[in-house]
Length: 324
Image 1 (cartoon, rainbow, N blue to C red):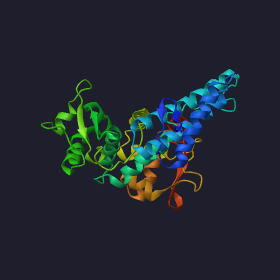
Image 2: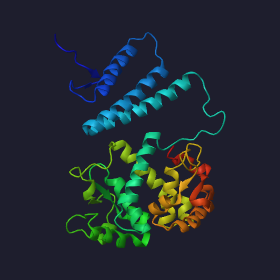
Image 3: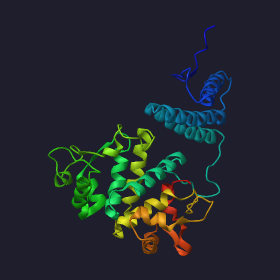
Image 4: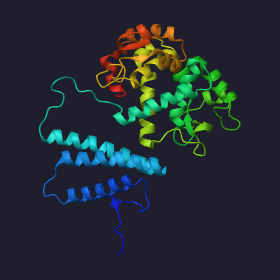
């Protein structure tokens, strides 16, 4: 007897896909979508749940196989679930946010988790200790996260590092962490324009190296845009915040809950040692930079007693929360 061909959407599930629990879930998911299509009336709440299941299942499938297109489909399903829920609320006439202001989040919860993985990678793998180099490593890692290469312009570099840009770029190239194109110097990169950017390579992120991250191009672009918004924040620029302060802004945003409080709820606040390590600071210096974030209305309050950074994001920073 010929074995039934299992499909989810336009995807055929391989007969030998492992683990078996994943193949079972994909099989049941395909049946559930087909059953939904046969319903006489739509139920958007049910459909949103199916998209959620698809996002989770395809993310696991992508991790098992290393197929980037599956990761991208998982991200599309995650977006579809969110959009479907918004449609469902609109159809029911629910005024979203009646209990308080609606916060339009830049990142989904899943993208927030990816952001924290990138930040931890930078914390443990940045080749140089200074805050300026760590900021450059963060931004370049997000540009090159999927393919190991990314485009930068002089405007990017100046925005990230100001007058330190050429020095830091050259130091990263001398270290071997970064490769510039042949016959292109750090000085040349500073003059590159959007219509003719400099394509740089991060060898440790090339597809031939062990994979550091598993997310699609939509998430990569969203994370890069998120970090750009934080580090380029207008009030931080107005306060002339240095690289360490802007790194602290990134770290606090990524490690905040939906209500803006820092920490994951199991233990209030963030360990100062981890915060300092990411920002290229000494633990005792975090307090001063946290106070700068308070004056810039990035943090509503901050306290560094007991070896932890406690506080919460100011209201204006809530859209950039990593949704712990």
